[in-house]
Image 1 (spheres, rainbow, N blue to C red):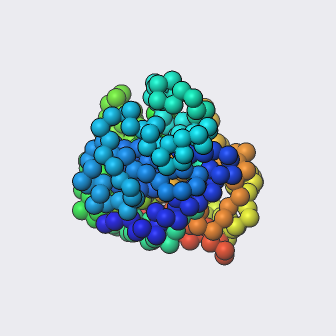
Image 2: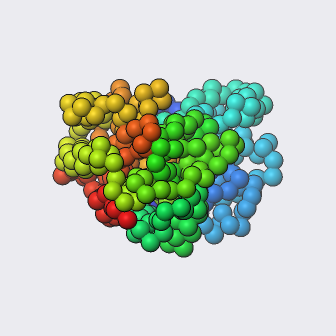
Image 3: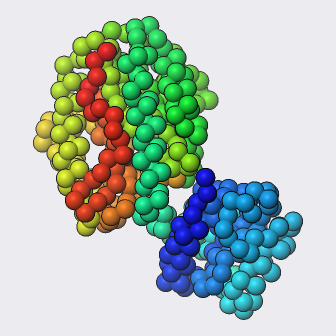
Amino acid sequence: MKVPMSEIANRLATFQALLGGRRIDAAIIRQNTDLYYFTGTVQDAHLLVPAAGEPCFLVRRDLERATRQSPIRPLLPMTSIKQLPEALFNCCGRDSVRRLGMELDVLPAASFFFYDEKVFPKQEIVDIGSLVRQVRMIKSAWEIDLMRAAGGISLAVADAVPGLLKEGITETELAIELERVARRAGHLGFSRVRAFNLEIFFGHILSGPDAALPSYCDSPTGGPGVSPAFGQGAGERSIQAGDLVSVDTMLNHHGYLNDQTRNFALGEAPSNLAYTYAFCRELHQWVRETARPGVVAGQLYDAIVKWVADAGLAEGFMGPARSAVSFIGHGLGLEVDEFPFIARGQTTVLAEGMTFALEPKWSYPGLGIVGFENTYRVTASGLESFNQASEELIVV
């Protein structure tokens, strides 16, 4: 699978226009996700992007794979960091690089100081992380197809749950079986995250009261995990009759993600959880019709919060009171936490081609969690869901 040359060319052109608009003479792309997005390959490399002119790709390892996978030319071997300034000046002109952009939102501080003091001491280095994310926020038709295919993996996982869920199986055992289904369906086995210390593995397979345990993860759900080394997600609890089981998965198809949550009841679910789930379905439908181009993300968040409060369901919404998150949706693509965020105070205006996961969820201490999640694309007529799994509360 190769990223088409037309995709790379369009992305670079959009990015270069943003650089010029901010009076940034050139950018150096270093982070793996951004390298893949702009070059079509993940290598130990530096992509040099002038505001005007042809980019240059310097690869430390592996040059042969980079040559096969990336359409960027020139593509040069890099044996020393000392090559970087000369290559950049060749791209832009020696006297024309005064402001240099780097992904300071993800670049380690020690690396920044090295580039700033040793490699480019005469240049001003500024952050272009938000510009990169702005380019990536609008998905092309090619990217949308990959995200739909990721939704197909999520469908396979959800369809497998009723045949695996039984009394006495532990959350971890269920997670293991579902991960096997996902890998056989094409899941790459990992998810990329941009935020510092935000870690994701497969998802949260949670049941009963333990599902309402908060964790360090910036998520409306937490769970106990199996070790303090990764204190979130499925634990060793045995699932019992009457439990509501939340299957929240993050699945990866050729780098592009799908986020999905579905709820299953082992026998009859507690009545208040079933009631909240029915409301959640109504809320999703309202958001599908409301979230159109021109809507401000923060205003959509406020409207959803009001909907929930007016229904008398504010308690436990988006997590226990002491650890509830201040978002209801997050952008999704190559990373878990892309733009836009459906969150408090966000000023991003929704536009066609944006994609985000919407996850209204409620936490009930002593009972568990309830709520489902879809990954959506913004269209002129509302939201298109990439998730085809049934939205019913499935009773097993």
